[in-house]
Length: 116
Image 1 (cartoon, rainbow, N blue to C red):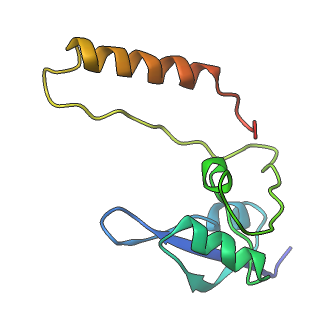
Image 2 (image 1 turned 120 degrees about the vertical axis):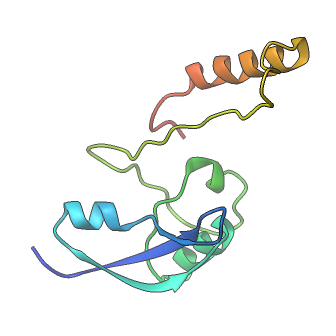
Image 3 (image 1 turned 90 degrees about the vertical axis):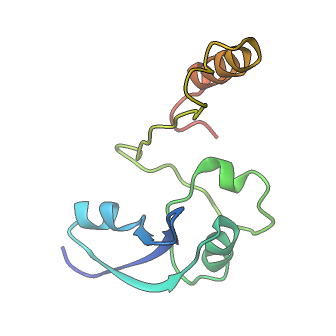
């Protein structure tokens, strides 16, 4: 199979372009054609809303979106990421920080992959 796969990019925290949508295209043996770049999820969703392409977008970015787009689950395997809580060295056991970390762990344990 060959063809074009419209894809977008975002920028990493250091401002370096980071391709988000190439992996599914590569897995489908399709070469991505990058035509738009955006550093903000709302801008990415806006590009999709005006039929400028497709993009992988985290579910949280869609919650307050004002753009009319359809979110479809990625299958058979959804992309995954690891999320960490950064705390100052030696402060993880401070009562107020420990409570916040435990709340984050509890919330994360309740999440289901692919839930919207």
